[in-house]
Length: 255
Ligand code: MG
Image (cartoon, rainbow, N blue to C red):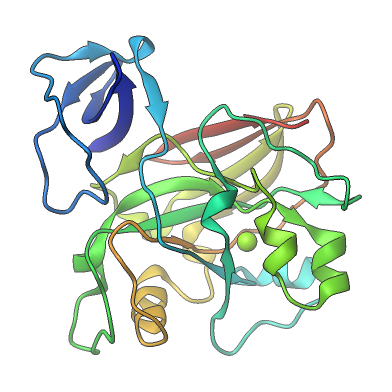
């Protein structure tokens, strides 16, 4: 099911998307967030609503260098265990919103990524636990990065967390085998990154189990699973698109 969060007539709602229609959803226990005051009863054309970010994470946990060719293109070794860092939740924007290049950076780059949305609290998973029991679904994410500041600072907090540096798609796909799907990133229609999730050094189930042993993952939290090779600089006037097979396209202009 393709889930979206939207506002319509001054209230917010959850819905399931089928082609051009949204079918309102009742409360679902696993939904990351649901303010549902007023319930809708009939389907609505998607063009009549304002799509909202489909989750409000307490944290965005990112995995660095999880594709070997991307690690190599930045001159880094392949990590022996997942390299974790955070993006600030305040960096989130949604489909169609503007990525703003800050004056502090001369080298802002895109990183198209598959994002995992956590469906229920998850701590210290054992080897026998199934990590996918804790997944709500998957969405597109752009881990926008000020590459010059990432190098200069020696850690990632500033380079990854400027406002607007975390575009996420409008849709969470809940029924998806994400183990081997195509992930492409285009700038102004030209393909820059073209990979498959099967190229991850640490696959999704490994990441969820590993992260849960370092910190509690809360419902609604996002794991950005790393980016394939082909990152490139964004400049004002560009349009950056992250497309993931079975999920859809995340498109954002750059200013
Ligand atoms: Mg990244």
